Image (tube, rainbow over all chains, first blue to last red; front, top):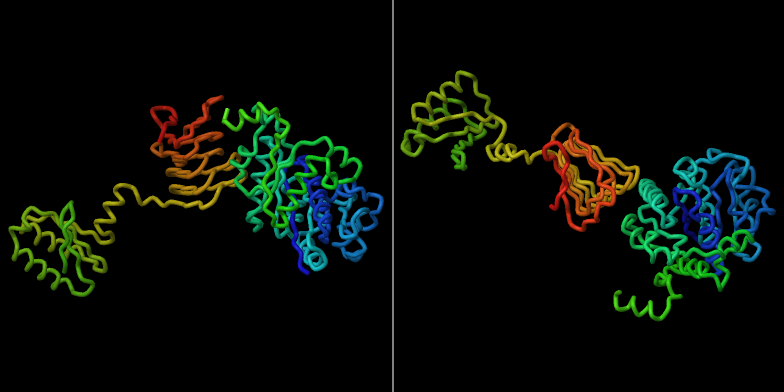
Amino acid sequence: MSGKSIVVTSGKGGVGKTTTVANIGTGLALRGKRVVLLDADIGLRNLDVVMGLENRIVFDLVAVCEKKCKIRQALIKDKRFENLYLIPAAQTREKDAVTPAQMKELCDELRKEFDYIIIDCPAGIEQGFKNAVAGADEAIVVTTPEVSAVRDADRIIGLLQANELYEPRLVINRIRPEMVRKGDMMDIEDVNDILAISLLGVIPDDEMIIISTNKGEPAVMDKNSRAGEAYRNVVARLEGEDVPIMSLDNNHSVFQRIKRWIGM
Amino acid sequence: MVFKGFKHGLTLLLPEEGDFSWIYNELKRRLDEASDFFRGASLTVVTKEHRFTTEERRLLEALCADHEVRMRLDSDQSPMLEEVKEKQAFVPTLMVKRTLRGGQRVEFEGNVVVKGDVNAGAEVLATGDIIILGALRGIAHAGAAGDTSAEVIAFDFHPVQLRIAGFIARPPENAPRSRHPEVARVRGEAIVVEKY
């Protein structure tokens, strides 16, 4: 078995990298894939919290890289899925506790056991970023429809390409259809215009995400969540299925929809 | 020994072999044969491998003067190359075959052509012209060594800032978004952007 490692990155902080990692990972596990989530955000770990696994941590990424434990010992099995694991970041160390070569070696080992390795990249473009991308075969760039987030995403795409990750795919997070309609928020087309990479998914802004994050239950499992549905589509696209980007404004009045059809 | 006609006059291409006396006699023979044709012409002698001494050069000039032919030596460049060079088309040009993203910078002595966008946070600096086959959203500095005739051309013109030689401009606030290619050049004491 030889799996695929995918780094999830953004440049800017707070755009939803960790949430995206948790949801994509859980979504793939829902489909029966063997998945390991790798938290590369050493010193500011929180993927374990989002996954609700914080209290099970014994060994972490730094311990594995320093060969203080076996990989198997650092793998934390998810509460809900037999085939989903987490390797947490160390909280009391810093980014330079790990080297790109060690990350590469770790990914090579994990690829033998898992279908997918999803790497949660820290914000920024320094050592932590270099570590996170070192072992990756593919990259997902997360952005929100804000000028500053798109700027940073653009910079990150350039850096990914310099690291031989030539075709990163884009997730646009926290779109608010009513704001886009009023012209107060960049729309998908504006973002695509600037970044010009293939679009993996668009996630609507959804309060459920905050609730699910706090409860440690990824939204992708919730059939009633719009964001969850969007993440399920992202997972399907990762698996090579051709799913159209979902329309974000289906709660229009009939009159508005007719206006839209005739191009008003 | 071959004569070729160009619009600024005749060119004499010398063979690679042959010593000076042969060249001299052959040229004399040709000039004598068709002295009416050569009268008043200007002749460029392309010497390639040959290096004439001052004495040899004087002899050739005297021979041409006898036949009322203006002669000049051109030891390294063909007249066609020279013609092109006069139009300054031989400035080196760098082809950037991708989009320049934030934080990326290209600096080049010559012209720069970008086959892609120049995004916000990216910078292109050239001593010659800058041509962007895409959107300009970052900074472009043309004529960076002081050439005020340098131009910046882009399909979609939305720079953060624009520099030509020593002039700096930024687009006016709330500038209308144009959808056609535009060119920026120095007019008088300012950078002017107009439809290309």
